[in-house]
Length: 212
Image (cartoon, rainbow, N blue to C red; front, side, top):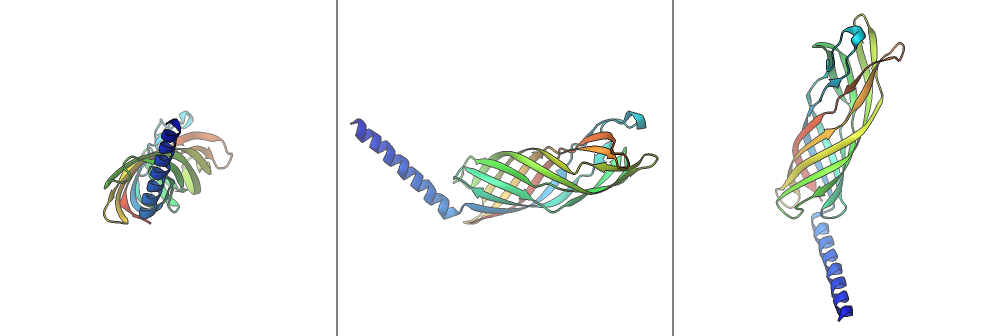
């Protein structure tokens, strides 16, 4: 009886796994999404006492950026997502006065859990890591000189969103992410640190996805 019971459990597990694999294969393991994303930085910066600059005076502009992501479903519930865009240019202001621009390229990789993978409404959460490459820094403060930013930033990323199935392949998507991006601000001439900026943006995206 015990052997028969054990064989029954094994058979059920194999059948369940085969069914899940078949369902996953029918819908496809890959999804590509395209989103319009509103990027809203936290703009948390250190004070610069020697210049009379208060905390949070360094501001990076809000803006809307394009985003594309590639998702691979490891199982029906678990997926990995790589989020990409091209280098984005941002204005920077100090106490309301523009002091220059910089570009950032922020690829993000997350591991997601999809709660209702077979439903029409499919919510998910995710967590992962962000790597941001800062470039084309063109910042200067009158009386102080040219400023520079660290080239690289590595931080965490949290994510939540949902897909709505429109037909066999197409989905409507809403996604929100919190990404941690930090950079030291230095004097270009000497390399001396004058402040630190936590950009830490919230990214709210709306778009469509194609699964295959």
